[in-house]
Amino acid sequence: MATTIAISGKGGSGKTTISSMIVRALVEQSAGSVLAVDADPNSCLALTMGVEVEGTIAEIRDLTRDKKDNDGMDRSRFFEYGIQKIVAEAKGFDVLTMGHPEGPSCYCAANNLLRRYIDKLSNSYDFVILDNEAGMEHLSRRTTNHVDLLCIVAEPTIIGEVTAKRIAGLVSNLPIEIKQSGVIWNRADNGIAIDGIDELGCISFDQELYDIARQSNTIFDLDKDNPAFLAVKEILRTNLS
Image 1: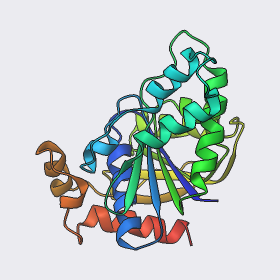
Image 2: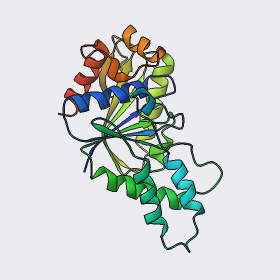
Image 3: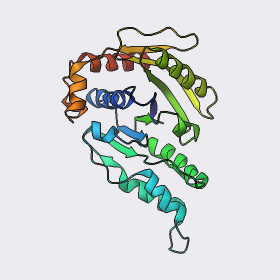
Image 4: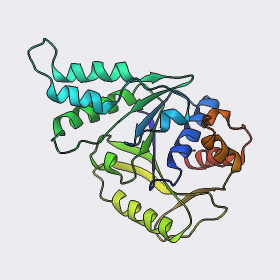
């Protein structure tokens, strides 16, 4: 079973950038095979890593929901075949993009297929990195069964503290196993002590990282000794050992 790292936080907190740095760190450390899952409807993870996406899980889910059973292929096989086609292969890692949320229709059967397939797919990788949507809806729909490390990304402000507490509160009610969770304080030299919530580490504001995003470069253009990247590597070292 893969080691699953989930990243959550409100929009604009930097969770997608941190997710991409985690992927890069694991790839460069030759830690094993890596699957990056973009579970945010505002799909940007592949873009930050310079990967072109051919399709999304949501599109396959919709096709599976509407599929007729008279074409010789059952829905489970149809769904699995579709997902295999949209896994984007990159140098040292793969990317899978969730796409838009369900909307008004019922997707219970499709989500059951998705959970079963992601669990099956994770057996083919050493690490699965989940860049979650802001409200934790992806995990709350139980589209995966376990998380080894949940990183709550927040800035050390009143809003950031409230958001971290809110997400941590949701964690205790999720119908999945989460082995470890804590806050990564982003764009900060120091965090805020919150009772009952571990601090995983701090990542200081970094101009090079900001410029890369502004100039539409990828996370692999970041200098290998960049302080923010080194901070992410240290967070992985201390919390995955």
